[in-house]
Amino acid sequence: MSPIEPVLPGMGVTGSRASGPGVADPRLARVAALVRRAIGAEPLALLAGGSHASGEAVWIDDGGRPRALSDLDAWWVAPDDASRDAAIAAWRSAAAAEV
Image (cartoon, rainbow, N blue to C red; front, side, top):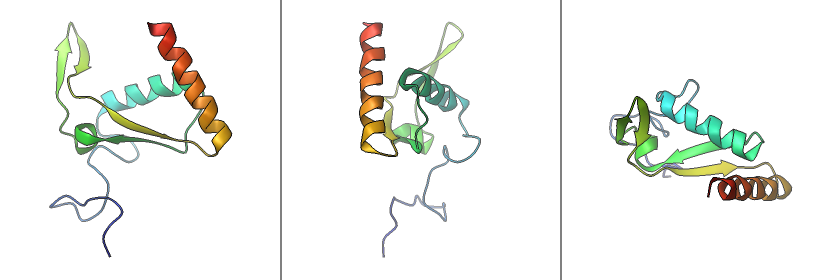
């Protein structure tokens, strides 16, 4: 039976170095807080994928502020369809306000 997600060599379990309580990279915690504020709700889970999840994302210092050069693949896990629809509407509204 294969694991639900890939297990990297040297990691005896599924998951990533950047996951779990007390996220290893505080920059991801800041991104999660911004997403939660934009959507105005708490997810069942907020998952990062790609280089951010593996801890291999590229960051630079941009005038004292961290900026990711790697794109962020993220999934917002809602408890039901209504919560999902509300989160999508809130995200689109927040994105439109930024334009």
